[in-house]
Every structure is written in C-alpha cells, then in structure tokens.
Image 1 (tube, rainbow, N blue to C red):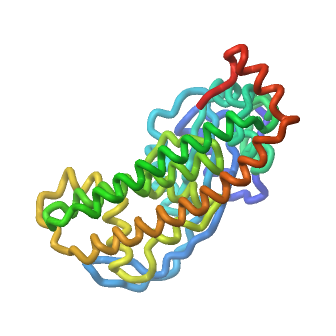
Image 2: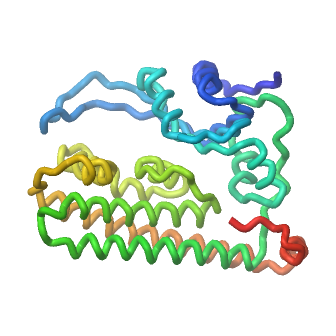
Length: 302
C-alpha cells in the first residue's frame, strides 16, 4: 500500500479512523484551522470555561464505494476524537473522480494540484488533465448563479412577509433556505462544484475557503448572536418538532437583517468573480478542445 501523510503526525490516527468508517482510496487536506472555545452558553447564561483547542479540517475523500451519509462520518469523527477534530468532508467515488478528471473538473483540478495529499492507497486516481476554458462553461456558471440568486431572493422576500409571531419558525426556515441558495451559488461560481450535503454550517464552511462572508452569520460573543445562528441552522428541526409559540420577534428580525446582508454581499462577490471568469473563458485559443468534445456529445455537463 502506498501512503503519504502530512508532517503533522497527529493526523495519522484521524486518517485511520476515517478508513475504518469507509473504504477510502485517497484523502486530500484542503484546509486546516485551529479554533479556541473560551465560553459556553447554558440556560441563557454565558459561562467561562478552560480554553479548548479544536482542529477544523476540510477533506476531499475519494472512496471505493459511495458514501450514503457524509454527515454520519463527520459526526463519528467528531465523537471518536472527543471533539478534537471537526471534519467537513467532500466525498466522491474513485470511478466518479476519474470520470470528472477525464472530462475536465475545475474543482478536482485545483484540489489535486494545490492541496496536501494525506493518504493514497495506490496510483489508480488519474492526474488532472487541465482546466477547461470555453464561453459555454462561463455561460453555465453564470446561469447557475442567477438561478441560485433568484431563489435566495424569493425565500428572503417570503420570510420578510411573515408578520405573525406564530410563523417565526417558518420564517427561520425560509431564511435558512435563502442563505443555502446563496452559498450553493457561491460554491459553484468559485469552485464549479455542487455539494451533496446541504446543512447550513457545512455550506458556510465551504464558502470560508474563498471568502469571509460567513462571518456575517457566524455568532459573536453575545448569547443573542448564538441563539439567532442556532435558530437558522436548526430551522427544519424546530419547525417539525416544536409546537410552542416563539415570541422573540427581535431575534427573527435580526435573522432577517443578517440574511439580507449576506445575500447582498454574496451577489457582490459573485459578480466580481464572474467578471474574472468571463475574461478567462473567452480566450479564443482555449476553446478548440471543448468544441470538439461538445460536437461529439461527450463533454461533461454538470
């Protein structure tokens, strides 16, 4: 077995745990940051605790078989490492990864060329063939973003129209959907990647790779800030499981303001990136290969 590990030997055990949960072929480290927790929130009170360091990792995991529930693996790793490692993973099968690489995947091309290889079973994962540039690719990206932005605005507008306090749980769900759509649009614009997991913390974490917009929504030090963020993240659960009246309208209004700011900032960042992509994809010398493949009906369309 061929293996390659990061210089941080502490990750060896994490990779072994990951391999015990899935038939892993290759693992790439996309991002690693350390966080410190200095307080916790219980019953509305902020309680100071001993600083606790947690490593937050983004991993590309290529497996032999499809991973049905990526969240299960992420939660298992968090529990088995006693909270030491919080993993946000992107999962592909080996066959799927090779197919995408063969036809030109901007996302895999970047990760496999720029990110750190942590583990490799053998050499069956192909090398990237290069970035695919063509006006049709730009059109696909722009259309995807426009669709996501329209949906984000729709859900945000519907949430604002909810005036009855009884509908606050529904309002949070609409706001959650609005933020999710904006995140999905940003991820496609910057990575040309469509996640298979749609949990709000997961999408916000992916967006952190290329922008600081998640800081708009992430909780600050106050209890209210944490409450609003928690209500946004758990909107689906709260709507289904809670039947009591949510009377804190000020929190709902704060969530509306944050969502509006996030979508507005997301639009600005996406438009800046789209201008770069338009220039890149309209380079005439880069279009011939794509045109030949699309004429034969074999180019990947995602």
